[in-house]
Structure formats: structure tokens, C-alpha cells
Length: 127
Image (tube, rainbow, N blue to C red; front, side):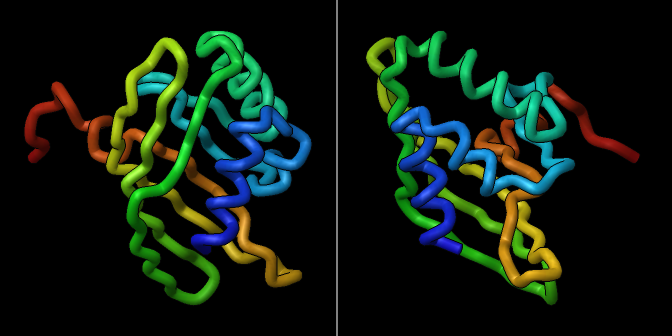
């Protein structure tokens, strides 16, 4: 899983969105920021194109630690993801990724949440 994610990170940095989309399932969800996500490869591609523009085509992504928990055809990845750009100092996020193994054996990302538990900020306890 580490190699898959490293390859996806390289595709993001190179803005090789055709290659990047191969890492995602057809119905994948990408969290763009807390409160905003997109679903499906076409929307994910548009999101990454906009992200690249917003960060002046200088996004850098790398993993600084990772734990993979597998159960059958599902994998939960907890990662320290470091993101930076020319207009963004390096930020370390506690990312959460969910992968599914497809019938051919290939792992694809179904949920890409680089914000992890930050999505809970401002939400009170639930009953």
C-alpha cells in the first residue's frame, strides 16, 4: 500500500492526473477540505486541477509515516501526510484513506481524506 500511495503522491506533484485517476475507484470520494468533497473520477480530476492552480502548480505531497490495516478486500490507511506549496508552508495532516481490492487484485482508493479527524472539528458529541 505504501508504494501505491507514494506513486499517487508523485502523480499529484507532477500533475499527471491521468495516472493519478488510475489510483481511484470509479465511485471514490475525495475530501477537498472540511465540509467539501467530490465523488467520482471526473470530479476528482477537476478538483486536482483546481488545487494545482490554487497552489500555483507547486504542490508537494509526501508521507511521513503510515499504518495499514487490512481485512479481506478493504484496507484502512492512517498516514502522516505532509503537504506544502509555494504559497503554503509545510503542513502535516493525520490522513485517513480507505482502499478496496478489485476483482483483478488491484487496490484502488475509495475514500481519500487527507484531513482525517479534522472533519470532526466544531461538531459536538453525538448521542
